[in-house]
Amino acid sequence: MDVLISGAGVAGTALAYWLRHHGFTPTVVERAPRVRADGGPVGLRGEALDVLDRMALLEQVKALNMRLGGAASTDGDGDLPAVVLAGDLQILRGDLIGLLHEATRRQVEYVFGDSIATLEQDADGVRATFERGRPRRFHLVAGADGLHSRTRSLVFGPSERFVRHLGIYTATFSLPDCLGLRDTGRLPSMPGKAADILSTRDGTEAYAALHFASGPLGYERDDVAQHKRIVAAQFAGEGRPVPRLLEEMGRAEDFFFDANTQVEMDRWSSGRVVLLGDAGYCAAPTSGRGASQALIGAYVLAGELAVAGGEHVVAFAAYEREMRGFVAEHQQMGREEADRFFMGTPLQAGLGTVAAGAPGVARGQIVRLKDYASSFAAT
Image (cartoon, rainbow, N blue to C red; front, side, top):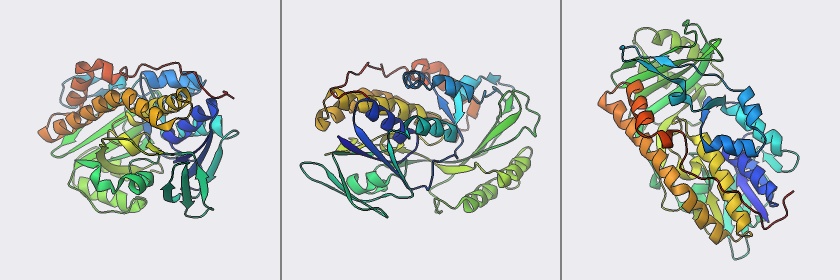
């Protein structure tokens, strides 16, 4: 069966791996001109590590672990262990995508610099037209194209129906350890604003996140210079160490900015089209859980398709049953963290409460990974 995957991020490349493993023929289309090498750190927890192990990639991920240090609170409330912020392992998003692409590029067709324009379903498959390439037909389509999913908009409707704004924006970027953190971190907070400055790579580098409360803002998705101006204006006039952070932000090449939002949908499939990862169930772009959800979701979706022999109605329903509880818990945690931000609770205390109160969720232990037997010939 031919499966079109929209998006060559973590979700899309992982799905391509498992579909090929089960004997399907995936094609990945990505609007970026090449493999994405940007993006800040992502935390990997629980069963996501098991998925990577089954892909024979876990040791490579461990070798790229950023070794995030813990953080000392600025108000004397104690230290926040690194595992609360980062999960069991933390790796740059671009590094993780690079590993997944390398593991699939010889057996999977990748089409870069293009994107889906229209999708037309019928009884036998889906006709896809593209912004640049010729139209093609596929048996199934998977939307793994992130929070701002084009696939979701085409098949399910406009984003406003599904995207819930949590009232917070976040910017992330790496920087030299110019603050002398040495395996520790700082978590300064201001009214309606907060920052995380964390030591990485055994104290040789640092990573910063700047958060601020705001209603929906208008800006261009790909205009990084505009994003930096927005953040600089929000934090102008704040005391140390914010001015130095803004200075480093201006130079950062791995800068990321987005709203903290969630995607909430009653169903993740419509006919022969299914959504995966942030496209269908984003917990919040900066929650630290998106990559783990994407890896686990890709494994489950491909496995259920294999067990069902490609019968998509059966497989998509099983995929949702397996993933719904896991996603619901993560989204609830995201909402609780946003509430604590607005209540003025220190960020470190809020995260610590989440970790202590829901250890199974924090470690990603809701999904029990099956050993999927394929109805297709594994290759």
